[in-house]
Image (tube, rainbow, N blue to C red; front, side):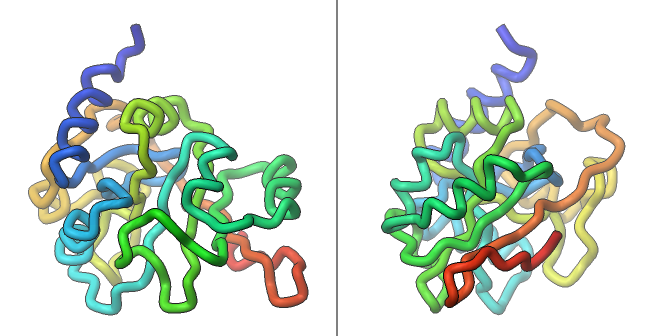
Length: 189
């Protein structure tokens, strides 16, 4: 049995009830919720004091899960991801089956396939995608580790994962999308 089973069980209970979790991802610490629950997504916007309602990233456990949340993803993206050296978030066109307030006005959704064991097992056990947005108030610098997360964020979630709280540093993912010409465009390296 892994050392984070209790965390995963507790997270699943909170997520199923529409609550928020604070958890380590394959990149930085994130605030998460059920990516199909509009009310839960709204709670994240409120906690982060995010008024512009920009889209947030969702995490999936496997490449095949992309097809649940995106209409006809281009195979060029999967080819790119197969050779990516660091965690990479992709902005896909034609989002579906997620909370409406996660979909950008242009119909896109940002998705990352996680390689981290904790996230992969959490998503697999929950059986749905999970929102991941940096664990900070909107406009503030993202925390590089658990100790840098503000009390306001910690107090604003329903469960804080114990796993990986002692990690020293982390970095955000790369972000890519297919441009109008059908070529990979790097938005953040």
